[in-house]
Image 1: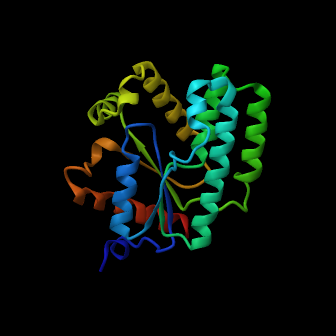
Image 2: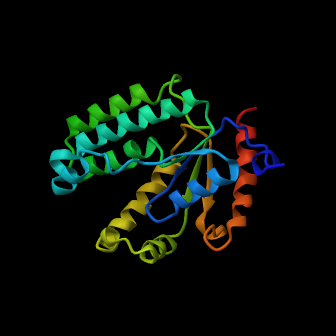
Image 3: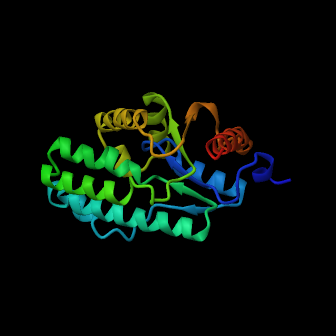
Length: 219
């Protein structure tokens, strides 16, 4: 019996991983995909035509960037379900509007008109009965200290140069977002409760919870 059968996780499940920078979304995505023999859906950064422009001029390009993300994630979500499921998704379509577009608006790097246009487009495309929502959103959470410790450990140059105040703001925005999220079932997992790097077997405790949540929500 394989792990998917052991924990009664349907072969057509679609599971999305969400959480702020540093919580280990990519690690969890690959660990779950390997354990369940699922495909992965990863964020495509290299082909994004707006990213460099955006970092050079937030006000000029924030709306364009968010629209691009919305279109790409929408197409990817359709592709996953047309394929028949069996995917682990690194980052959700919901975070862009609930966290990033909202932050740009509140900080003045996106105009009110652009923000409302973006929100109305998101609502029309995503928040409808016709949009294929994931079976489960796994929200990886941890204390601010645990998250910043992981960011320091992995040592990515751009992240090391980012002020700690930014990570603190993002940590708070993610917590506020998930507390009001209701588009699909949520499984909250604390990053202090497992260690996929040192103990690959700890994925089984996650799989047990995943199987329980998906089967409960499908009843």
